[in-house]
Length: 115
Image 1 (cartoon, rainbow, N blue to C red):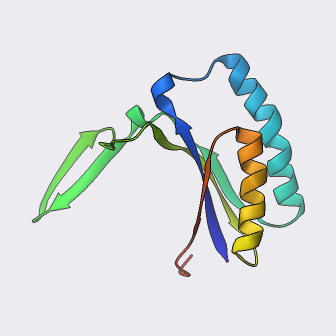
Image 2 (spheres, one colour):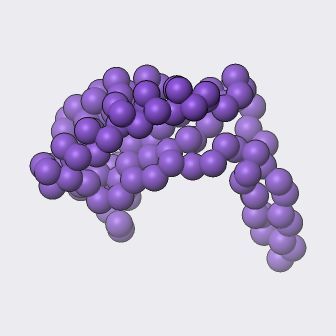
């Protein structure tokens, strides 16, 4: 089964420093390597800050595009992994490893079976 492990980051505090990024990469790289070695890796990626997003809406046949999300929260999606594991317990175990590496919350969501 495929699971999305999404990295939730408090982006209200501004972007991380170069030192913080380097430290994060040094912790996340080995996690990525282990996922690949164990055959659970499907895809992963980091995202630019939320203010780089564009929201597309279609309502009553009319399309609107607005800059940035309009979400009442400090935490935003900052990156993700897509993994393929046998069950939720295995996905949660990887989420613990990812949360330790990223030092941020990780949301775990199963795909609907169509992935």
